[in-house]
Length: 396
Image (cartoon, rainbow, N blue to C red):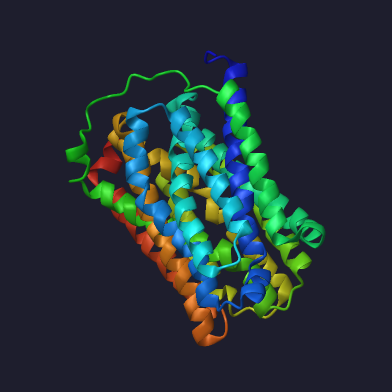
């Protein structure tokens, strides 16, 4: 299949749908966490560990996955990721022992690493630099759109199927998409990539490490907020699981177009660092007050605004390294960025559970998210001041 419009649409659709089915399984764990905690008699700290262990293994596979994808067919690596991630999700759903659940989550995180980076590269290969931030926003929006499905359909399906059945159903659908992708998808048009940014050079630049700090802050916020939001609504605010599902679904419905819109805005303004800085600054303020607000309408408004800013800057952030370092290290830069991000995700998912057990509420945990958003904002300012950012016209 060539790089025709039809080919681009088919490849992009299959990749996004495959990503979405796995995101449904992950989102179901967050939504049904109160049920899982009750069934297995878990503390909040143990529940947080279920998310954190997958994020940790996912983090440590980012750089290897990026290096492998730079050298091997992204289609093959992506297919391996789909197969393994969905098989391990089914194994998780069939588990009745907490230790075995942790093991399946840890191994599943490895396979999810083989989905994300190859998927991003497959999408990027079909788009020019001028449209790449938009395309990457579409890729991630598909995954977050799945939260709409699981949070609206999940409460309806949990009675007849149980939380285990919902996860198994989404994973079986993911395996069906794998078959379609294997026979209908391709690696996309090969690109001549510049050799001006050797690996040894990028590791010695301030911009490389500052981008790592921003990525760490990104998933620190995303993981802490999205994983614990249903539990916050149910445990701290007294929402029923169906009502909590609706709130999370609506926030996801806002998140998906915000992700796409952030990419479009960045491409048109040609100022990705501005989009990133505004997003992190806004989240610092919103997260600082989320746990303190007693008014339900105001709290829901804050959740909606966070849903906008939490993904508005994703496409711009992942487009920045290619503009600084070139496409020759696309897999490595994506892998390093996602490695840093998932270390943040691991830490926040675990920390918020520990803080909830220690304090009896999520207020201190949300303040920790706000503090990290401020750190990310400071890193953006520092990146703007580097010669690399100015020379590559990231801010003007």
